[in-house]
Image (spheres, helix red, strand yellow):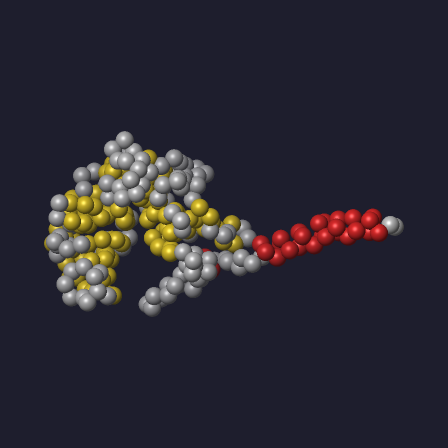
Amino acid sequence: MSTSNKIIFVVLVIFVFVIPVLAQEKTNDYPVLKGPYLGQEPPGMIPEVFAPGIVSTADYTELGCTFSPDGKEFYFSRYTETRDIWVCRLKDNGWQKPEPAPFNTSYREMSPHITADGNKLFFVSTRPHTLRSGDPKNWSMWVSMRNATEWEEPFFLGTGIYLTSSKMNNIFLSYFTEGGVVIGQTKFVNSGFSEIKSLEGDMNSPYFDNHPCIAPDESYILFESNRPGSHRVKKLLIFTSLIRKKMAHGVKLLT
């Protein structure tokens, strides 16, 4: 065999055997994740970084997450060059690497929330609509309906951000009023929101209340606020006893 033929043979061996092995090793850098919560320990009483290096990364900012009711899909917001929604899916061989959600656009999307029945995925976006421009400051609420196999094309709902919902199909969200940002309640009716009403009782305040998270049975609600009593600009509050649409017994959790 001539020298040139030997060189060609060696190159072919590298392409056929070595490169696929290296590619497989690179693929295998992603850990095998099986079980609930992306294979992470169930949540406890002490806050911990969730899925470090997988969901929570050093290069980006991740927040605003939601699981599907069957626990097989996990959506979250990731701030990269833009703001997008990402998804991890549970397959037979474990949890797959996070990838951009199929309904993302060139505009900003964030704060996904899947309802208890798994049929609706709400999120906010700056994508243009006939009632709103594509200005990055103009966040609007959108929803995608689930069919037998996938999420359908999202459609515009209206103003509002940071939506959360209960098993009773009540929706709570932050919305803008002349007095500032408050938390209101509404329902999804006829492919849109019913009238958004401010919560009564101690929840109705002149302060900046934001990022609500309602318990499935509506026994308590978590939210962020700049109400007095903290040296920080914002703090996390919990209000319990949602009775007759009134919140009472506020307790400061974190500052």
